[in-house]
Structures are given as structure tokens and as C-alpha cells.
Image 1 (cartoon, rainbow, N blue to C red):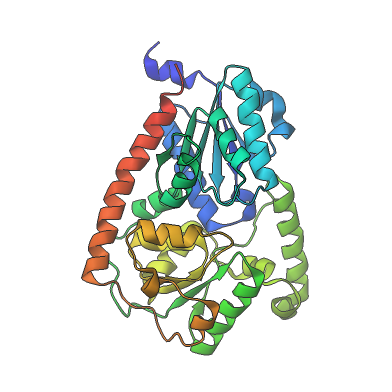
Image 2: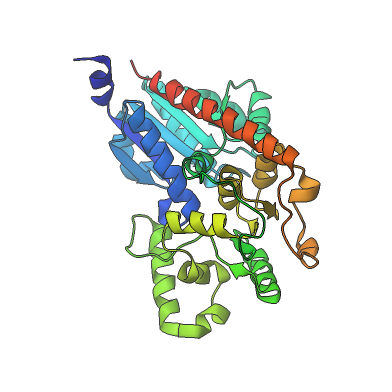
Length: 345
């Protein structure tokens, strides 16, 4: 049996499957995470929605390796923070390896940050999170969010060119910001296309069931759904049906205005000019800063949206900085999956 076959015989569990949110960015992340693990010779045997590892405790504690997709859930001492620290600690006691990857880490207390020492591998997706973790003496890797890798794989041969179409406005994780963004698109005659998509089949997890029920109710409401229900759930009804369609709309647009981190990731990777408004953590600003973009030009406030008349094309300097960012990102992604593979004998 060769080395690759030995690795494949190990049991690998992935925790933190966010596809139950019916979100194109989450689809992109999981496609790259699962594909990257398979490419490294360690395909996942079990993929678990969310961070509730106790619902699969035997599998999570008994696996040879657990890989946790942190994304944007580990901030402000959320329950997800406690969950990931507990499973890492339990597995460390059992002599088993655990990796936290593709994660941000914002505004958690010092004790929680020190608890990351129980992981055998910690990989943050932005320099700001890495610095916060490194200040506690925790060694980390850094690689951009895996949605960037997906966008790079879908990057068109012909670069984006100015005036390709109407400006596209995406949504926000914050309902009040989504309302403003949607109204901006209406007033300017721009295209409004959320990053969320219509649920076709129910998926595992409480969040999936809730979205499924809300969307079924909205379909019964008809046109009134856009006014009577939360813009978060209404967004599922009007989103692009799949990731391929969503990326194509981004590339065909005249630039993008968004409050969504993963939409910004895809724009940076695809080379589509973007202007962002803040999310629930500094993750979008951290991404743009990492990519070398000027926040005074590429980020705005909710008040600033009112006077917006378009999205500025990338300057030659910005295009070169983005090229360098993507080149560095590809190296870091390869290093990340190589490091995960080395966790197994």
C-alpha cells in the first residue's frame, strides 16, 4: 500500500459545513475545502453542518483528523467559539489531531484565544485575525478565504472591462443594510442580486429547515413577500439559482456594491470592481486591505451609499496589486492543504 492509499484509509471529518445557509459563498468555500482535501489524498468521510459536533460525538472524537471550517462564525465569544475549543481540547486529550482552517477570529476574550493552542493547525483567512491569534503565542498559517480560490478557478480569460453592464447590488448579513442596498438598486435602476439562492431541497441542520419553511411561506404570499417578510428570507426567492450563474452575473456587471464578505471575495478573485459596506465584523475591510485596495475608495458607509452613482473601475495600480494578491494566495492555498496532509502519519 502506497502513502496516498494509507492516507485515504484514515477517517476524516469536516465540521462547519455552511451550505445549509443556501449561500453562494458557502458553496464556493465547501467546494474548495472538500476538493482540496481530496486533492491532498485525504477525502472527507463525513461532513457535518454547523459547529454542533456533539450531534456526531462518536465520529468527531474517534476520527483520525477533524478539519473545522471556521469562516466568520468565531467572533464575540459566540457559542461556536466554545464548541470548537471544546472539541479541540477533547481530541487533544485523546491524542488525535484537529485543524481549524479558513477562519476569522475577532473580539474573543484572551482565554478563548489561548485555547486555540489545543489545535494542531490553525489557519486564519486574514492578517488581522492572524495578528490577534499570534499575540497569544499561537502559531498560525494564513490563507485568504477559500471562496477566493473558487473565484480564481472561475476567472474569465478576458479581464473585466468597464461598462460591461448595469451595476450589481448585493445584500448584507444585516437586514437593515439589506433594505438600504435594495432601495439603492431600485433608485438607480441597477440590478439587485443577493448572494443567497432559492432552496430546492431541504438540507440537514436547523438553519436549513428554517429557511426552507420561510421560503415556502413566502411563495404562498406572492408579491407581498417582498414587503411583509425579512429581506434576508426574501433574498432567497430572487437569488441566482447556482454559483456558476452568480459568478457570471458578477463578471457581466458594471461593478458591484455589496455588504457580503463572500461577494467581495469573488469580486477580488474574478477581477470585478467592487465597493463594500461593513458587515457584522471587520472581515470585509480586512480582505480588501490584504488585497492592497484603498478603503477610502473601495469602502463606504450607509450614508455614503446615498450619493453613489457608480463603481470606479480598477486603476492599473490596483490591477497589479490584485494580480500579486492572487499569486500569493495560490501559494498559500497549496501550503494550507499540504500542512493539513502532514497532520496524518
